[in-house]
Length: 363
Image 1 (cartoon, rainbow, N blue to C red):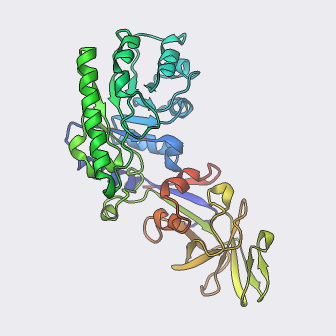
Image 2: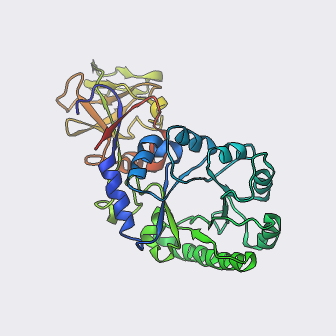
Image 3: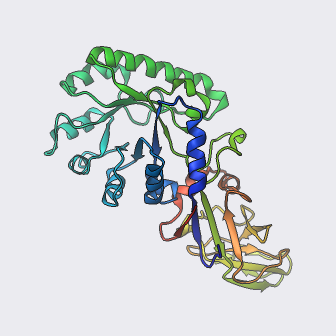
């Protein structure tokens, strides 16, 4: 494909590969929830949800009700879990057949007191097993069951906090034990079997024996497994590419960008690219941090990244205006490698990719 502007390429072949690889770690009857929150980690939620439905995904998950609503309005029919509903969301959630996570007594009250509430409406209960972000604690089970007043969730779930960290196996195993204990306690007291999910992508890869009835995968679907050994198994779904807008010759002592962010120590050649911090490229890049690829060679980002543009040093590269530039992709420079330059993780840049960037589907 000829690149003529900044684009996000969404590789659906790689998405399918990643889903199948994760399935290979699971029992055949274990359900899979695909996480499509935050614009599907920058890919485009509708593109990803459509493909996951084609691949017969069991559930989808979003962070907020508005994300689920947007998918419903575009024809997505799969069950959708809303992970972090707010108190004023429940009429919308029920109207559009979304499934809320109930994670606190305040949220439970808002759910059961909304005008569209139906006692048979499906919902899930989130427990806190050590991540300390959202969820009920085990010692709240008796009060929770009393306030449920006969309501029964479709699932009980929790979230591992360090399943990607080899040095924190004990912490993860403790979370698994807590989850196992509290779910057994909850089921005994509520008087029926309730399905469960706990594992995230790293949990699937590192603790697959605790897959319960369903697992969740977010970053794994998009090609990252937080472990180098899975580099050939999980393939990045998102490529970020742009073009050279203009080339300049800079004399020794000349400056580049706002606030004279870069001063040339020699005569150099630079290129300006039509992508900046409004597109998701942090101002932490530049001035020695980060490279892109031009015609197969690394070109350092120089000066201060602007809102809509950034500059690179192409002094040692043969190229011309209009040539393609790889910011990151699935073959040359991964998002993981690109983000290491500023000490962050792929999640951050992927989720920061602006919606104004054109999405192009690769099949």
